[in-house]
Image (cartoon, rainbow, N blue to C red; front, side, top):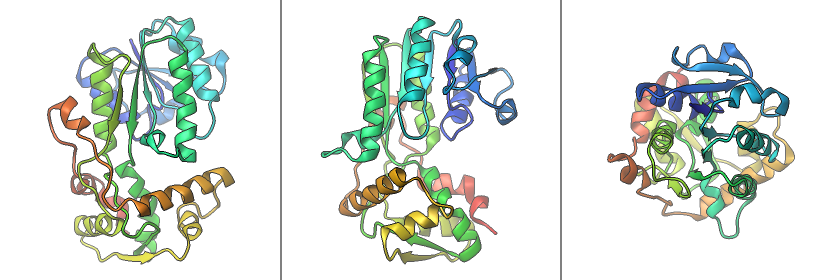
Amino acid sequence: MILVTGATGNVGRELVRELDEKGAEVRVLVRDLARAAALPARAERVVGDLEEPATLEPAFAGVDRLFLLTPGVGTGHTANAVAAAKAAEVSHIVHLSSANVLGDPMPAMGRWHHEREEIVRACGIPATILRPGGFMTNALEWASAIREKGYVLDPVGPGRYAPIDPADIAAVAALVLTEDGHQGTDHVLTGDEALTVTEQVQIIASATGRHIEVREAATPAEAVHSRFPDGAPEALAAAIIEGFALMRADTVGFRTDTVERLLGRGPRTFAHWCARNADAFRP
């Protein structure tokens, strides 16, 4: 039995679908059953909360493999999940981390993920660490401004990065959860196209048939406000601004061939993702 946490998110729901298509026994841990309505019917649902350890025993009973995705800042969710996994004698953890841990010096977002990785590594259960770069779905943070104002604020200028489709992350996760030989490995995952914000917006414009303006953000803080109009927690806002500075400095764009090497095909393109999600950017 494979237990999937974060099953209703961008990666998790794609992973449940992938595992269902492979015929794997899948259980999903959800806080709200209604949010799991769109998941494959064959997936077993269990209500629980990683913030409340007492709710986890039923979800972990009989589980031998765990996909661990923990949201937000901090290590509490990770520690609770790992403790439950040890009690249930889980044999393999696939942990979703971040390529930010590779930074030198390591940025704040990398340190948060690194702390979680250390908890997973120290628990004694064989683990596979997945370290994706930026998600293509991050472009949805521009959707409201595109729909309502017709423009995107660009805080990174000439900076390039290679966004990855969460469906590709899920495909890799499904592979390592159902195939032997990945325990004790780390996989850094990116897309294959190193794009600027302007190039991403041009692809969205092509997919939607709209003219979309790109405006350079006056300050990184302005770009943070556009993403979180009601305000972001101070630590998160600072980490995002730090990330913008690092992205602006990388005018080449970090890429790996891991997706192609593991799956035997290239990563999905941003244009492919935009074609599937074009309605999100239309009025």
